[in-house]
Length: 488
Image (cartoon, rainbow, N blue to C red; front, side):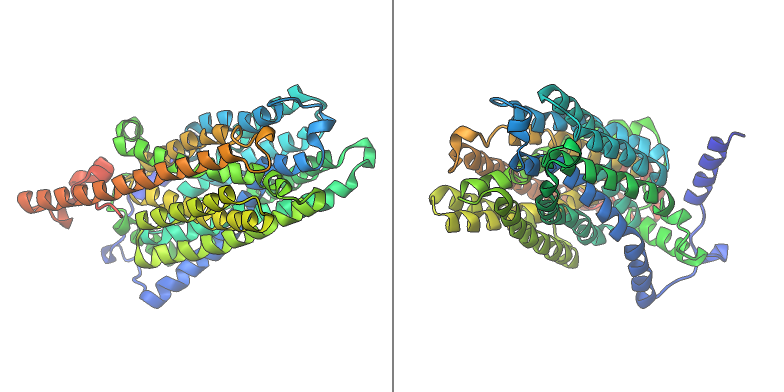
């Protein structure tokens, strides 16, 4: 038997291992011990994956900081060439996400995630050596390809470690790294830009080079520190591992965890997958526009150079705090959809302020409110998807579809804030309001639909006398199982 076959056989044995007292191995933990184990998992998983995403988001959005540091005139970019370079990232990023999550199911996360990090870190470093539009375009193309697997991959991993009602807060902590990337990226860019002229390189080039090298260093550490699955977690005792697997089995309804192509097609053919995509894209368009063009918008409000870099930091701080608090409360009351409605309205209010007045104070307040709306909506929406898709492979594919196709919205984000519209950016702000309105409507439809489906399933269970003892019959049906209930 080959080493690969042996590994698969071991995973299958772990998956089908007994989790009740008859095995003599499963130990029941009370609520206090369960909370202790959960904290143990949090400390082992969340800080490091948050650091990985901080680097990922900083590397994809630092082109906005580089623009303020002189990228456009130094590379002699004309017309929409900067926008094209910002947008091209999202094409390869979107196309690679589903294949990456399938690969993640076949390859250990501790191998796959660090490997793609090394790849994008090298691309990021080499981006600092580009000399013209063509070089920057090619670098951004490969950056999107290599970065694609991290965000959907880590969200998929989180769904394999935590119960559904625990995921929003953990995803919020993980995603808050994006807001920290905005803070840290702005401060770091302001400092690195002062290296202008060292080794004959411009300040913006040093932004790319140093941030890329940092990513490679952290990726190498990740090979030795990342954990794969609860069944193989070295930081848990055998009894703790079995407890974690059991609590997940109960929460997930004992649905299939093995690889089978039919689960791939379940994901592709489920109409709900595309509702998730539309909702998520409506959030991502303003998210990426905010990240790519906040320094430019702040510049248009009357701030310049290093001052503009630094003034882009406070909105991210507010967004970070709001992200964690809303994620925590969403888990506490186990509600998702209404929070997406609320954050969408909040962000719309911010854009209305940006549209309504040319005064820098009003505009900056609007930018702060936008951050309070768009950043918290991402982890809640991703958790909502993870909560409502049953079966490991289907969940991995749907999450990759939602994040992948949704990220095509970044192409729109790259072309709506044009120099000719400065400083008011009526077109850009108007598009953001429309995009958020689409998210609001789609989320509303989904809330109504999930309530309808749950009522249908309850009726079927009563009619056909389907109870918990029959879960095994519906194991391969995913969230279509009559025993599966959707989260609102």
